[in-house]
Image 1: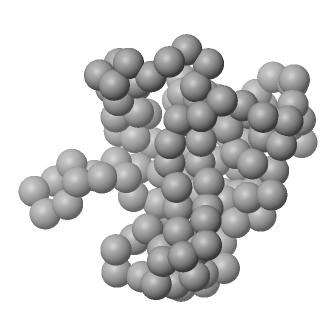
Image 2: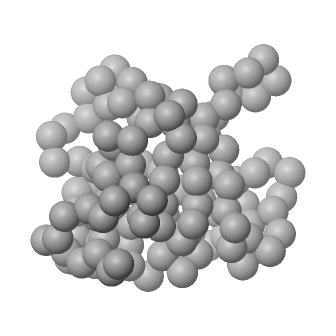
Length: 122
C-alpha cells in the first residue's frame, strides 16, 4: 500500500519504518521532557557521511510535501520520500543497557554497517 501526503497511515504491519515498544516509549519521553512543539513529528532520515557512507538521522521536524507519514506504536513518523529506498523495512529499537544507551537501527537494506551502528552502506 502506498502512502501519500494527506492519506492516513496504513496498518502497522504494512508500514516501511517501525519502532519497537522500547523505542516508542523513549520517543514519547523525549517529546514530553524536551517539550517538543506541537506540529513537530519524528523524522527518520539518512544523510551522507559516517564511516560506511550513509548515517541515520532522528529528529523532530514539521511535515513537508516531500514526506510520507506513518504511525508506529502510537508515534507519528515522517520520512522523506527519497529516503524510503534506504529505510524500507527498518526497525528502530532503544537500548538502555549498561554498556550502551541509544537508538539501535535494524536495517535489512544495509549491505554493511560500522561498529557504531549508526552508519551503513546499501
